[in-house]
Amino acid sequence: MYNQITMKVNADHLILQALAEDITSEDITTNAVMRNAYKGEVELICKQDGVIAGLDVFARVFELLDETVEIERFCEDGDEVKNQQLLAIVRGDIRVLLSGERVALNYLQRMSGIATYTHETAALLADCKTKLLDTRKTTPNMRIFEKYAVKVGGGNNHRYNLSDGILLKDNHIGAAGGVKEAVAMAKEYAPFVRKIEIETENLEMVKEAVEAGADIIMLDNMSVEEMKEAVRLIDGRAETECSGNVTKEKIAMLKEVGVDYISSGALTHSAPILDVSLKHLHPIE
Image (cartoon, rainbow, N blue to C red):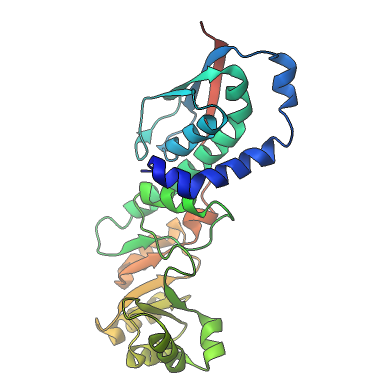
């Protein structure tokens, strides 16, 4: 869960950018119909079944516009919610409720959609050792929110960014001159506490990666039979990960391979939003 320190350090500036994108000078529509401050409340309602994620971010949008806004919640991140369920009530200056509505819902819908898709995908791996990972295929300036949503949905985070871990991909291998050379260079350069992962595309590369002493070997876009053979060749000498166009529909087939991890960019780049709305805005005393 986001706490106040995390939000202020890592998320507030991103939320403010989103608000600035939506309000360049004024909310002309709201200002036309609400000339003065007046307290009101509005209901946050779910319009389809799913897993909710991003309630702290949703609330923070309104708090950055007016710290006196109050949010009464009836659920928490990670809860399974139902169509027409009342999730929260937001109370405050009606002008703030109207001006923050779209940005707040954009975050909540996107994050809840990712949590829902991740939850459905992770459930398919519940009966085996393989863990589900996300990737760096995230929306620019949304990574902190999208990776959080993956965890809420029951998935696990791969490296957060390029500074967070070593992953030698095809172009790194090409630049280094080969698998062994790339691993050797990484071992020489990286702190000893860093694991070294390398992407392989065929069994010959897998053999080279094992001999070079890679900590994690990614099996990228291989057939199921090739991956099974790769796992046999690796024989526990490195952790294993499979990747490459992994979607929810392919999980049942891939779980048979026996890898330690399955990474899926689809968790963040292809998850549909969860439909939630702010409804029944009205003045209160």
